[in-house]
Image 1 (cartoon, rainbow, N blue to C red):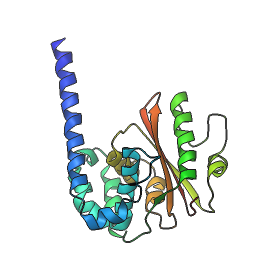
Image 2: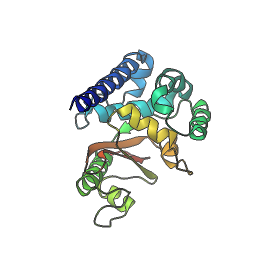
Image 3: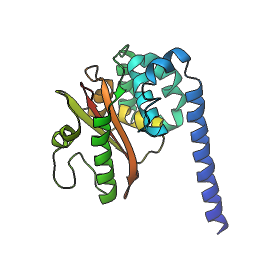
Image 4: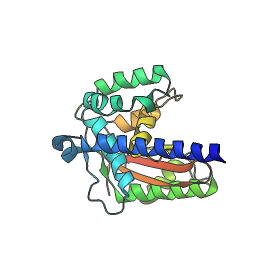
Amino acid sequence: MKIFKLLITIIFTSQLSLIAQDDDIFKNIPPNILDKANTAKNTAYLSKTEKEVILYMNIARLDGDWFIKHIYNKKTSFVSSFSSSYRKSLIKDLKKTKDHPMLYPAKGLTKAARYHAKDMGKKGKTGHRSSDGTETFVRIKKYAQGGYMAENIQYGYQSALDIVLDLLIDDGISSLGHRKNILNSNFSYVGVAIEPHKRYRINCVQDFSDMGD
């Protein structure tokens, strides 16, 4: 029993430390970057964490080199668990990323993402196809418009920054599709939904488009 209690204490303390670390990173974002990248700050239909997911994606798009120095490099204990080859390729890609259009929240895209996050979460499923077999873009276009669209899904992480870093590193995904979606300059709008998941605790769905509501 003592060992169990000690284990719980260690895990809880570790989680608090990680939360504090992310809070410190957020507090040290300079006003000029925060003002431009925090496009979702007044969006009432998004949670705090969903807003922060958009913020961190936008910082990577705005100034990849700043993102490396002041965000990525502050999360060494987290990123070190991923394959070095994927980490190195991310650094290379971020160094080439500068002044991409900011992603703005779109209600339709958020509805599409929310539907899928809840659907997958309740059923404990993974993937881009709905539980009833509906294809990804058929589902998204029920709620949103766009000629160019994409979707990311991340499972397991509760922190906005961990969600974004995991998708940017894209460990094990040879196409780097998640990373490419986040850094794709053709996208200007996004919907983000974070919901409970039956198997993975949390799932985050991001739907991207070149057109807003």
